[in-house]
Length: 483
Ligand code: ADP
Image 1 (cartoon, rainbow, N blue to C red):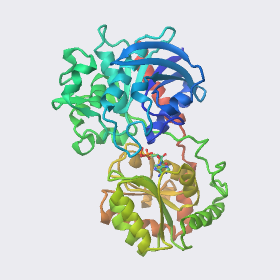
Image 2: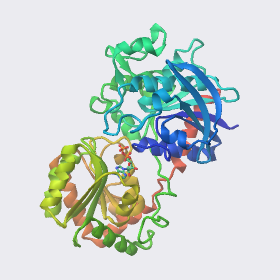
Image 3: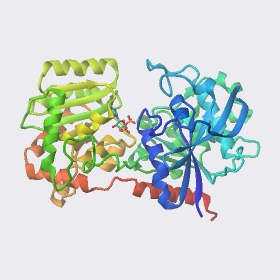
Image 4: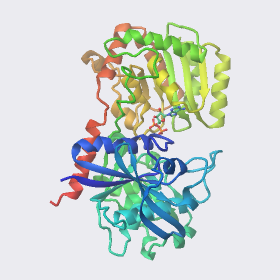
């Protein structure tokens, strides 16, 4: 029997993306299809989402007042799969990004926007639209968290089992208690085991407290968030629900991320023909204004933030150059880091090249031509760029945390002798640990046989969605099949 899942999220590739969340939500329907699971994705009606609907979309339901806003439920497709859209122009029909204006400032009414989105999602799960019935609700991150609170505190109680996935614990959706009257929830919801959090309201906590099961995007991160440094205030709740928390690593879309067929590359290649990468390397050097060198060309594709350890990388940039490396960096984020990397490039012309911005095609060219990808994150729920690095023979150099710990095998002696090492890991994101990892990477690079072995082992590893799609399907089945 096919299971029908309602996936509730604030972004999904290819319609709207600010980070890895969108990649996962966009990939899940396809990943689940072979497992007899039909997933319908529910998104807010941002302009880019409305534009992707047919000219005259089917209206499945109308709300006179969705927390005060007129709204409609529209039907469409995302790829080959079903899409539902909450069309509430007063909340979602605006320029800028999904969460803020063009300057990056959060919308002042985000609490109302995503509470209303959650209200709508709970209504849909509850059967408000004729002919639409689901077996389980899967909510993603704080923006969808209120869905599960509305379900839980519905007059008839929660009708469906639910899963919430934490893609990043750093974003929790905290608001003041003065929001409560506008939410339309019963008084008992404003309690410590409900949506209340330190006197205010937390949308993520609301979802975590209500969900039948909690998942996050790697087993290591699922353990780490029991601790204050990673749980960011919600570690107590995670510990209390420990047996219901698990980690499932993200896959990558191997149609998009495949060096053998990537149209962005100058030269396509496979694990058997790594020599062809050099044409991509020459093109990349030219694009970043870098000199040729006999040391590795390190690349970075990242938000430039504290989480990603970019401040520590900036400190270690001179060391990276001193040991014979070069660096090509693509990213955007904190202004101080952006100007810091510009300054490092000015200090090392021909050795460090920097592009500030977001450029998907360039990220492919970097993976196809770079030798090693640096991911020195302080925390990393799963991380995708190290997986792309593995697929492209661009060896990942990563901190041992979250999904980075779960997906990269460090080139220690035993792993190298067994031929299973795929990258370099280091413990703790500090100048010295990163500098040591860079030094270790350069010496591995200077041993061509060892380096080829790392590249090949990474390229031969399977990070497609097939395994993780099955893991989600098993989870859904465990919650929907009567014991
Ligand atoms: P996070 O979601 O925390 O930013 P992930 O590694 O999970 O980190 O996902 C980031 C995604 O965004 C990856 O697909 C990565 O390739 C992409 N990305 C990040 N910065 C850039 C950039 N400046 N240009 C192109 N792609 C980028």
